[in-house]
Length: 409
Image (cartoon, rainbow, N blue to C red):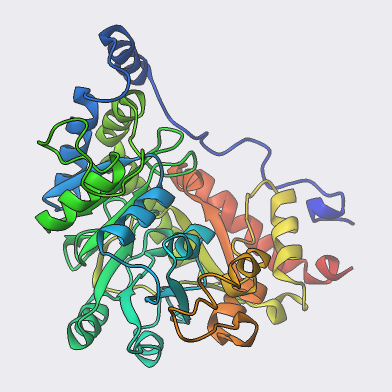
């Protein structure tokens, strides 16, 4: 008798998980207000209001809204005056924008390994990579889980380095009660379509440093200053401004975010408890210093040996057939990506840098294990489901374990 849906059996579930994005008449009304105002872009009130509310929400004094999270990272690096010859230490288990933003300012990404229990950047690996060229540590709060900010702040202070937080997946997440983004010098957020607060695209820079705020604001708005003449351009800025339509939607999205976050956290905790009892499945390790996790992703670790040697991609396919949207996530470390070859001449072999970088020689064992063998994801909208939805997920995992021989066929 066939049991697994992948082999022709009956799936655990056929009904969908909660759809994303979630919206109601409040977004429609907000868009209508912008439309009728006639102010759709510059000098509108919604951008300013959202900047102030979101910055305050993240325990920051200042916010600069931009077109996307990638731009938030790039503008932040420029505000820190990172450029030719500078090194920026980043993890390789992250979205490409983390590395590309560094390369776009003509700086050099230096890849650190990740913590095997948490998947955030490993402070010990970071410290081992610091050179006289290092200027910034760029931790990624992957999936909403804050990196070890205590250790990273200590390293940054020791070596006189900046910290730019990639918080593009971590709205509202907290490290020891402090919300990420402005724990370091400056932080970047994303509001792209899949994100837990979304306007289709959009991003935000937050900081508690007024000088960095003024630089970032100028760089995102054609080099102007907040109170200067419109056609006075002091810095080589670009146009990275958010529209009023995006800001209006995001203000509404922020209203329901706390409730959604509490639901995601409760469901994630339930999954941690139940899945940890299944041989071959290990949730990421909890950390009492992480006082809030926004859970853009639910990441767990898969041991193929416990499932008859089936690869993580094959396991994900089998789970998808059962109606559970498990994803392989990042399947290659950033230093193995083909697009890194695009930058071989500059900045990687720039004479100003004085060295050359060969990413083919980089090997980070924990990162590679996460990418190739171990790390699997569930998307954030799944965590907005009911307790019965979570039970379906657990049943599907148990079904895989109970039918290993069938899975191997």
